[in-house]
Length: 394
Image 1 (cartoon, rainbow, N blue to C red):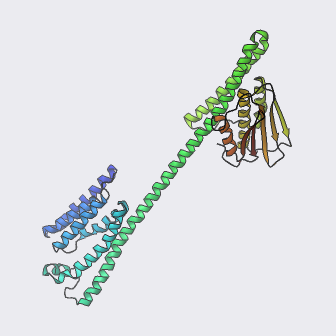
Image 2 (image 1 turned 180 degrees about the vertical axis):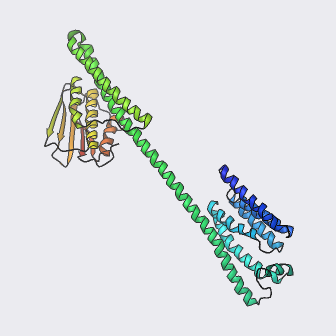
Image 3 (image 1 turned 30 degrees about the vertical axis):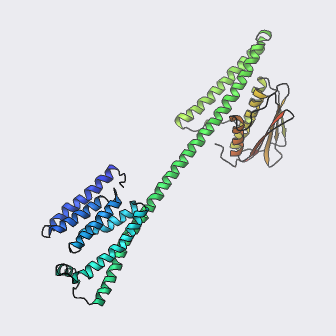
């Protein structure tokens, strides 16, 4: 099976064996033609080592066996064998890796047998082997001893090449895994940022439109009877719309340019929020228990958005004939808040819209808790937020 290689890798794998063949071909001019065939076969195996490791190993085996059948002495071209074993272990599949592992020991055994035993059977090979410093008239004990030593030496040599290939494969897979993890973390960060912007967009647009609709309805009814009230309602609509437009522009700029966040509302902005809702016709009653304590910025944003969404839901779904109570309790280890209003219709259940789900997510990311109840027509939004932000508020 062919592996996909980059054009540069493919060109390099073809160029290096070609240069090796041209450079060493001159050294084979005085030798039999069979040696050129061995050189050509080993160069082909080198060229295919990354493109097709299995074929490369097969070509190396066929070339080495042909060399033995032709009774040719070991040759410098045989140094391609450990390179092929390295490539098979590094780039091949599981089966090929174990085949190359076995090849290292089988090849070492064949080399020891071929160099020590076969020369005693033929004078031609015996003469060439003697040039390597090996006597062709060794005793059987010496043959076994030298053969065993040669087997261990070549097995270690080939095994080292195979081990280096496995280690390189492990390092390459670890690097790819790290890169994939970084990409996954980047995707998660992008998704979190999109969710944050979606939450902010929902909070800004839903709240602003709810106030605008309430003011517009009030202005329409009061236009004939009380022009001053209608004018005040239109002024409120204009102010709310401008603020919402500015907030939406900030959020859209973040989507386009990945720039830093714009200013986020804090608990000091709650009074202005209450006034906006009162101007829209809600009777917002705020009660605070205990001494106010410092609250982390992320926790302040969560408190503001939860109260904002709860009041917006009260404006859209609540019975405006009764007050909307906002309770802040500073006496416990966490800031606890309740927003209670009388519901005129069944409020949306958690998970069916963005409002309740967004409030729950903001409380959770701030390290707190969130819940809602509907008892005797009173819909209550409850949240407990740590003074210091525990989770990630983005």
